Length: 230
Image 1: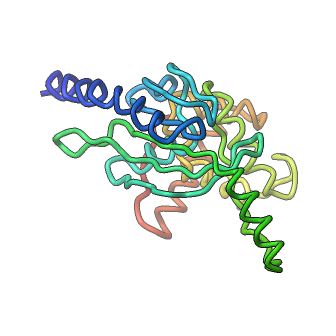
Image 2: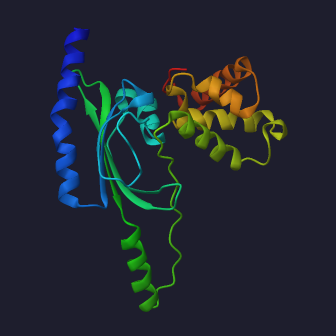
């Protein structure tokens, strides 16, 4: 059964590979299409066309992929959401999960469109029309070919929301940090607990302890959370 599912998943990815090129060619140079195999999170990109986020074949998943992993087979498609790359490019994206015949999620087909030029034109037209409403804040997403850089960026982003360094945080704030990282799917990546511990300057045992407590606290308030592979 396992070998059959593996062959089925491989066949789905192989069938979608030419689709990646076709979609990117249809929408032109502002479009990037990425095919992910989440069975190998550290090297999930199996096909890519276009260059909006700088992804390459053999690259790692982004934090969006981590979030899909965290939701497991309950993950749903995320369509037409707006994010911003770390270099400031405004991107409209859609992430469509791939499932095998059992309903298990094993990958995703992602479409990213650079809408920075459209956004600037919209702002210009709004200014000419006298519309002065401030644009909504757009979250920044880390896209990287190295999974370590994605994890580090997420840790830094969560720490920046806190009131100080790890040593200055109280217990509730530390649990909030680990709970936030867990919700974002960071700990679905192999070796992430050790990496987070090193980033924060704490022991591996302490990191596992805080993660366990954060999951227990989350479960006590909202039911069982999605477990991640540490």
